[in-house]
Length: 148
Image (cartoon, rainbow, N blue to C red; front, side, top):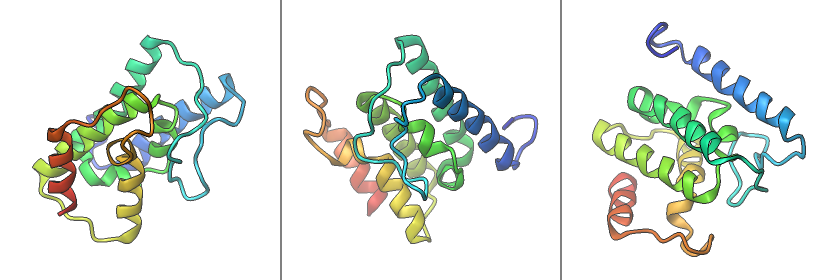
């Protein structure tokens, strides 16, 4: 969608929405952990995805980052889909997002964007929230650069 219809964020969001609905139907336990404005909770109720599904979902969430950077914060289904990933994989997507935002030089202008960004990078901010997942000094520096 990004290549065929550049600038059509509605197409990208529709693709993410299809994935959310498909996974929601497959795992209909209400486990998305998203509130009404699209922000993800710190620790959503996990659903079981196999390693291949987790890897593909992580790739799907990382694809629009290169092209859209902070604009992904405007996608309604991005956070809902991200909430399905295990904490460690959410951390990987958060690092990718911060790297792209840092290299793009984009600035956040809306409080809602900041709120959404903090929801997405929560795995980098909440040390000890998930056992066995450490935040490296490089990741701390990346968070500081983007927030500053």
